[in-house]
Amino acid sequence: MNDVAITSRSPQSGPPPPSGASTSRQRTILYEAHNLTLSNGTGIATYSLALAHAAGRLGYNVDGLFGVEHGLTRGDHRLNEVLAFDAIDNDRWLSPFEVAWRNVCYPFTALGGLRPTELPRSGLVIGPMADTLRPFRRVFVATRLIDTAIAHFTIYGRLPQLRLPDRPDVFHATHPVPLALKGCPNIYTIHDLVPLRLPYTTRDNKKYFYRLLTALARTADHIVTVSEYSRRDIIEHLGVDERRVTNTYQAVDIPPEALARRDDEVAADLAKHFGLEFGKYFLFYGAIEPKKNVSRLIDAYAASGSKLPLIMAGGGGWQNRADLRKIRDERFTNFRIDGDIVRRQRQVRRLGYLPRDQLLTLIRGARALLFPSIYEGFGLPVIEAMALGTPVVTSVGSSLTEVAGDAALLVDPYSIDSIAWAIRAIEADADLRGGLVERGRRQAKKFSPLAYDERLRQLYEKF
Image (cartoon, rainbow, N blue to C red; front, side, top):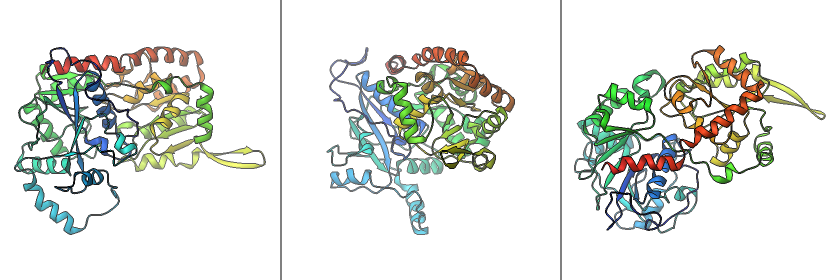
C-alpha cells in the first residue's frame, strides 16, 4: 500500500459540484486504482491518490475499484473486509494444481462480465493499509481482478465488462487495463509508451501491451496522459485523434509540515536515521531499472571525483544485476577514524523502500537530486525535489526537459562525461545551486494541487 496517511472527508462536504454538473446530485467517478493495493507503493499509486483527492476537491463522489488476492464470501461482508487486506506471501510458489485451476477458470470467469463486490467500511480493519482507501466513498473489489481481465483480453481480444449495481458518471482507469464499463464515458490514463519505444528496458509482455494500447486507442472515449511529450507519442504512434488525448500533467503535493521543517530538524533526522550530514550527499531515488540509467550515473559519479556519498533509495527493479554489482563495487568503500575506532563506510549506498516522511527528509537534505533518466512519462522526483528546495540534475529528452524547464541542470543521459561535469559543477558552485533552488520552487508551483484541479476540471467537464 502507499504509505501516505489520508484524512477522511465526507462526500457530502466540500465545494459545490463542478460547473456544468447538475445541482440535484453529485456526479460520481469510479477510479480503477489497483496499484494502491500493491506493497511498497508505485508511481501509479501516487498518481491514483492525487486523482482521487483532486476529484474530491472538485465536488465529485469518488469510488474505487481494486483487485484482491483472496477469494471473497457471498454472505459475510465484514469477513470480506478482512480478506481484502489479508497478508499476501509474494514469495510463495503456486502449486501446479493452483496454476492449473486458475488457467481452467480464467477463460470463463469474465464471460458474463466481472461483478465486483462492494467492500464494507465498518472500521474493523485499521492501520495505514485501510487508511489508503479513505479518499473513496465506496470501494469495489474483485478477486484477482487484473489477472482475470488480462486473461480474458488475451484469449478473446476484447475488454471484459464490469457489472456494478450503480453506474457511475465516468469510469477512469489510472493505467492501461483491459476493463470497460457500459453506459458511461470510459477514460484511460496512458503514462507513456516506454514498453513500445524502449522495449529493451522493461519486462512487459510487448505483444499484450501493444494489442491492449491499440484496442484502447480504438475504443476509449478519452485518453489521459501526463506530459506533452507522451501526448505527442500517443497521437503519433497509436494514431489517436488529438481531440481524444488530454495532458493533465501530475500533481505534486508535499505536506505543509514537510515544507515548513527547519534545516536543523532535517539534519537531526538525517543523522539519526541514516548517519548522513545535511547537504553533504547526493541522492537518486526510484526503482533500479534500465531506463533510470543507474549504471551511467554510478560511472559518472566515480569519474567526477566527488567525496560526497551517493545515496540510492527506492524499491526493487528489474534487469538490474549489473547496476547492483556497480553499487556494491569495492572501489566505493573507504574508511574513517571515529575516535579510537576505524569504521568502514560506503560512498555509494543503497537504501530500500522508505516511508514517505523519511524519503522527503532525504530529498530535503541532499546537496542535489541526480536523476539522469533515459526516458520518463513525467518524472515526479524532479518536481518533488524542486518543491522541497533541492537542486536537480536531470536529462535532456523525453518529458524531463519539458517538466524541468529552466530550473534544472540538464545533461545528456548517454554521456558519462556530461553527467560527471554536472556533478562537479553542482557540488562546487553555491551560486549555481542557489539559482536552481529559486527557479525550482517557481517551476514546482506549475504542478501544484490547485493547478492540477483546474486541468482535471476541464477534462471532466467534457463529459
